[in-house]
Length: 232
Length: 237
Image 1 (cartoon, each protein chain N blue to C red):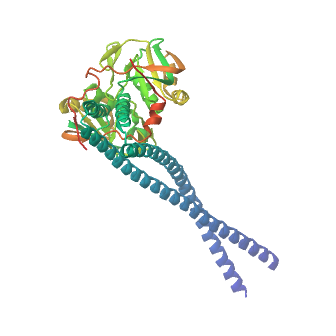
Image 2 (cartoon, rainbow over the protein chains, first blue to last red):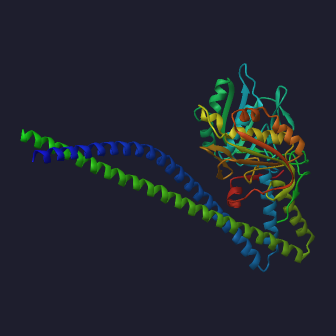
């Protein structure tokens, strides 16, 4: 009887020991796993939302085109509609290329050196990248429109954009959501925080009527001499 | 003696019971976590598949629309309309809305395989890429794409964790930048870029090669044009 009791106790203690070790191990593993999964899950959700938004936009574009195609097919007296469509397509392409002067709601930012440090091309480039990240529709620096081929480079004491020398103060205009742009510029450690450290004089103004000129159309900025269109 | 023994046994069993139930619950929770991640991944995959389908629909619609316009135009033989069609093709070409062909370079960038203490130094950042884009433009690049996304003047390019957000989509490395221009000038400009040397020092692979007669894809317009134009007023001069 006594032997039985001792054996039972030993067995139970052994089981308990194993259980404790198992539990400890599993809690540790779960912690690691949970962290990994949490990060993965939020990332997945973020990507899902993004994908949904993109699909919504795609559907809107498809619907628009479907209507245009249907109109082209059905309309008996299509001349007017047809010419109108073509003109709209031309205008849309010219706006996208940056060839048209456009007006809209946005921000006007001026930047100028306020101390020892000169405003360099890289400082302006950083600002432009930040603006592009907040979904702008048009940007200019000292009225030089930023297009697909626009460079921002150092030229002696000044900066050069679209092959033109620009002198300070630099005025950057952007058409887009002004609050969104301002928020991303004001982020901690963001562009404006850096400008403050460089002691730049910066002004930032929201405006409902920002006018951004088109790029000059002489073949020096939008260049196509090395490109051949591919017929689809 | 017997009483203490019983109490001891009771305690031991109590603990054992607690532990087993704890362990069991842990396993169940864990499974729940797995399911939701799997489910989310499946939903994402479905949404992405839907996106690819929509894109195909859009592409065939665009082709149909373009064909219809061309057919009507040539049937009517109206010089004004022929001129408008020519103008549309030309402006689409200049705006980056047409696939283009030409000589240039291809840059392939891949994160370092082994990372040291500061992981940030061993991965590619948006500033590394925007720096390269600026250098390409300064050296006469006429068309640029990254992982097949045509880069326009207002293209968005931001770091999003280990991936890069381009125009409206997210891309993981490697990043393949194509640029059409003078291949020799572009090659030398990028090869001699100080930041490229720094990246290479950290083990980030930056391969540059000259490529002849390559195609750069058009910008994929995938949002309502009317909506996009509605927030802009075109000021005629």
